[in-house]
Image 1 (cartoon, rainbow, N blue to C red):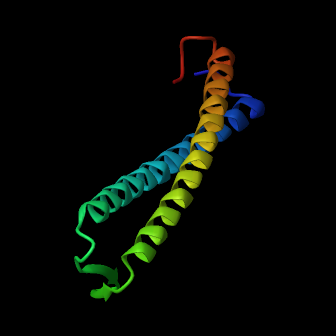
Image 2 (cartoon, rainbow, N blue to C red):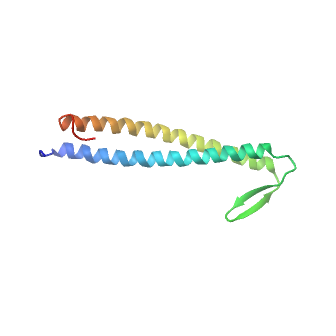
Image 3 (cartoon, rainbow, N blue to C red):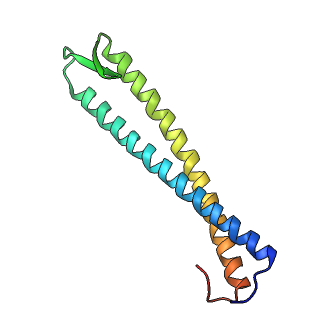
Amino acid sequence: MKDISPQLQNQITQFQQVQQQLQSVSAQKYQMDAQMKEMERTLEELASTPADSDVYRSVGSLLIKVQDKDKVKNDLEESKETLEIRVKALDRQEKTLREKFQNLQETINRSLGGGQGN
């Protein structure tokens, strides 16, 4: 294998860092998507329960009976909105990282002579 210039070594290091960041952001986004879907299911279930039904909220390892069903619904909707905003931010971050990842990959491949590398 031919010697690698310091510039190419730096690009490879950047590539690896971007790859790790991309994996981290994707994992966070996946986790928040799952939380959002869970929240949507909870809201649907809450909407389908009769008005006189008892509603409980999990607090640590306890379930506490809630007196105001509408407040619980509002709290859940606010949390869902917050998650939606965070997921959109992660989407933008993921897109930016993917572009940077692809650009670095192309640059490294060109530097190595085309067919080698990722």
